Length: 166
Image 1: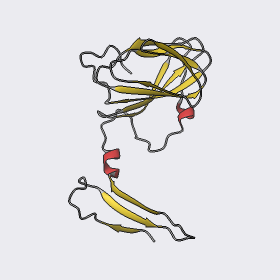
Image 2: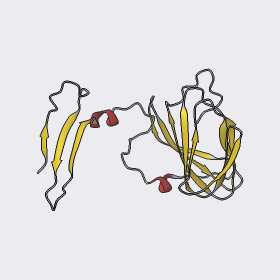
Image 3: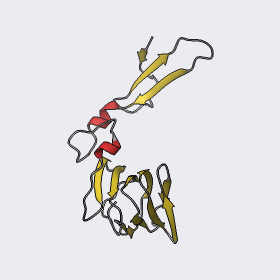
Image 4: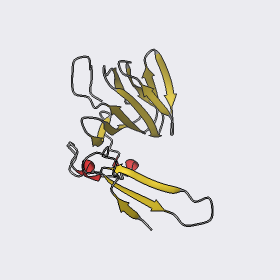
């Protein structure tokens, strides 16, 4: 039976709630405890999105243009940006850097060739491509219709040293 109680430690963030979930069943039974869950921070986050979605169906959110790669924001705050980069065959993303932000790409569908520093790598569904801060990176060419999940932290601010947006 779920039980809700305050943490009582004095170290939980303001507005957080604790809930302990007890599972009854054959041994061993895991005990799951959620502590310092800040639901309110999701709804009050600084995002240009009209309504933040806690669960998104990424393949359904993909958008494509014949003339250029398309970017779709999935989540944006001053701490993190998550989005989709959608490519038609032959499209690319210019090589660029982010001085103070790490970035990664996960290929959701399709195939593309990525540039990371001095390396060129082919990636397909399920592949993770990592671009640490200040390392030049981009998509040299999509060989087929490709959807890439991109995340970067902290989110870009347009500060000196950043040569392009996400």
